[in-house]
Structure formats: structure tokens, C-alpha cells
Amino acid sequence: MIWQQKIEKIVMLTNLFEFGTLKCLQYWPEDIKGVCKHGGVLIKYVGIKETFDYNIRSLEITKDGDTRGLKQFHFKSWPDNDVPDTTWSLVDFWRAVAKCNDTSTSPILVHCSSGVGRSGTFIALDNLIAQAKIENCVRPLYVVDALRQQRVNMVQTKEQYKYLHEALAEALLIGTHHWVTRQFESVYNFMIGKDIESSKTRIEQQFELITKSADYARGQNAAIATGLVYDHIVTQNEAMIMKATESKPQCIVLSALGESRAFIALTSLRDNTAENTWSLVGKKGCKTMIEFSNRSDGSLKVTYTLPIS
Image (tube, rainbow, N blue to C red; front, side, top):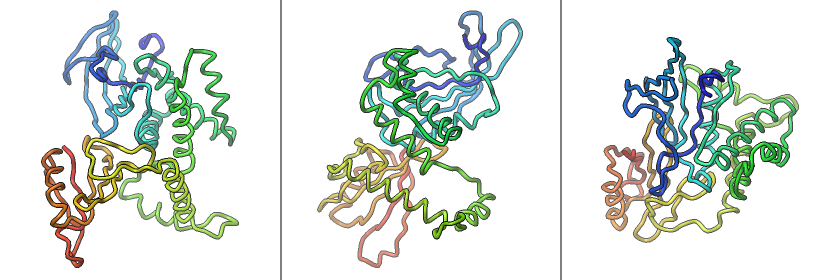
């Protein structure tokens, strides 16, 4: 199918194993530069780019002496029958898929484990973003209904349907935009400018959208976990925010762009919180600590940023 349809991009939304259960056979070689063969098609593993939430694998497929390039986008942070912990992680993944060879007219192959829940949500998001650009409006219910008429249970759960709306709002209202260093000056000058008939700069308008989004997320997630809970990530855009206690500092966990590591930001590291902090350092195998403080308030370390290996 990949050969016949001249597929150039594969979107993989499942891990090979989840909760000890095989969800997908590995259909590419185990090692880089390795090869395998399926159905008369030879697959060569050329290279990989790893980030915190997804990997991009470069493959070459050969049949009857003809060779083509292929990209596999593997999103790693989406549990089966559930939703990712943040919307921006999926939006960032979608942008990576969309920007790669964006002039291609070949269909995109999307798969997860059952091919309905996660696959349906991603396909619906892609369709709705395109609809917004073309029609200047979105119809999530109509799109999901149309998908379900073609394949049963597309967008499988209520949580996935709700998450679709949140991810769409993230993509259209806030979004995730990456700029190289040489573009900073021109982007900055554009953002401090104003649109016609607007009294606020573009950066002020974007800040208001972010504030509204954060306020909404707090309202939807009133019960924030307390303490330094290492392996729990709060849903929505709050990333991982833990309230400080007498012996545990506030902790925020963030993913890192373009790397397979994340960052932990800690505040107010004092004598009574040092033990828990160093326990976290040991558990996560942190190798780098960055301090932004003059220690004027008497704290040992006011803020650390700790990469997680």
C-alpha cells in the first residue's frame, strides 16, 4: 500500500508496547543502517531525530530497483484510550508533520493500535485546521461524524473529543511557532506592531489569549496535586505544576524542543526542601543544574533548571 500510494509520510501514534501489551509490530529495521523486507519491498533505516514527545525516522524503500525516501513521525506520548498530557505537544507534532515536504500531494498514512481513537483524533485535527484556513470557521461535530461514516469509532472517547477541541484552540489561537535566531529581530518588530483598528500590539493580544487559556485550564483542573510527585503530569497546558509544601518546593516539568530530554524548574530551595530536591536529582539522573539567583532572600538555590536524561 505504501509503495502503490507513493506514501511519503507515516504518522505513528502508538508505541510498540503499552502496559506490557504488544500494540504494533515493528515494521522498520531495528538499527540505523539496517534493512528488512516486507512484501517485496526493502526497507532501510537511514536516520532518526529524537525529541521529548516524538521521533522522526528517515527510511528508504526499494522495489524493483526503484528507491524512494520516506519519513515516519512517531508520537510517543499518547496513551491508548486516553489523551496526551498537553495540547501543545500534539500541536507541535502536527506542525512537524505538516511542515515536512509541505508541497507533497501524496496521502499521509496515519495509524495507532486499533486505528480509530488516536488516529481519528489526529486526522480530525488536521482536517479542522485546514477547514479553518479555507472557510474561516470550524465544525468539529460535522468532521467527526463524517469520519465515523467512513470508519467506525473514529475519535473513540469523550475525552478524545474534548481534547480535539482544546488542541484545535491551541493551534488556531495560540499555536507553537519556531523561529531561528536570525529571524528574531524581524519577528519581534512584527509582534510589537499593531493591526489596523487595534489599540493593542500583537504581542499584547497573544498574551491575553495565553492568559485566558491558562485561566480556563485552572478552572477545569481545580484540584492540583500537592507535593513533589515525580511521575504525575497534570492534564492540559499546566504541564506539571506541584504546589509547594513545608518540605517540598514547587516543581514544574517541561519538555525540551529538539531533544529527548525535559527540564525541571524548581523554586525556593531551602534547608527544609534540599533533601527532596536531591532525591529528585538522583532519581532522574540529572547532570546539569543552572541557577538564576543572587540568593538575596536567604534561600540556598532560588531556581534550578535540571535536564532529565
